View 1: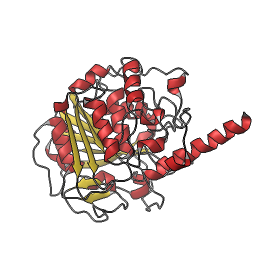
View 2: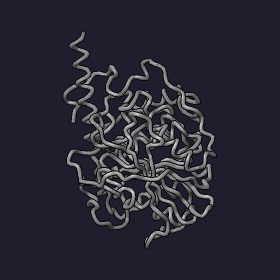
View 3: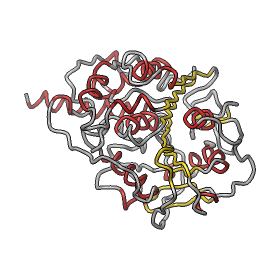
View 4: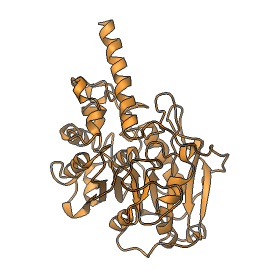
Length: 376
């Protein structure tokens, strides 16, 4: 039995590393070090205009946030990300690599945890959901993102189909799509850091306008707001896998006290500031839209560690088996930042720690068999 347990642990570690590799790839690009930063400020945030989006591992995590705190997030944008709770029900390689992940267990847990470990799933019906994938994306892939859509508006039935927008784009690899050129970005059809590309498609704008409705055209000239570093460590507990510094874009109007929206933008693996510098913060296009639409943008940052060498967001249970619930380490950290930015005005229900039972097993520890042929 001891030998079997050791073998299972080794397999678990190998599978987790494969998942991180699949969403980030080895071959780090030198980035800038984290910087010492002041405290996070507070702003006049409209509680009804808070949303989240993310790319790749950040896409998985954006859905986790949107489900766990569906009472807070009006909209969710998922760029090349997979279904909620995916890794709990299948080995993580079954959630990427253009697999077709099982969503039955995810749906069952969402219903079971509703109004307890997560907000009431009834809130999801009021959310606007945006899902994007490149048709040439073999890292996550359309088979995965189609399961996200099915969870929301088909099999799961949590959202009305009219509230879900699904986009597959020809000639696009595993990258965040924009419609403008920036030095250092990747060719759209290639899998190259920093995984941000001019695909002649404004991903940030398409998602934000789906979530909020028609918006003022983005500022394509010099931005009038401020990009601010802040002390993220004040919101992060031990072992949460997050950097000491986060970033915030604040339009001049929001700094002056105007009522503003808040959008949380989550980078993918290897896109943290400590890895690639400000590419994700400045080159994705979120700030251009925020500048003309009274919208603060929060860019939380992960950190690398032995268990998470590619600085991914935790969608596989790296920092606890409750990673996709309100009590999850990274979810609690981000929600604390959101609450601070909103000057404490949000009615955020307390996190409830999950007990130890079969549904709480961390990713990779589930009893489903795996064959060598399942590995990428």
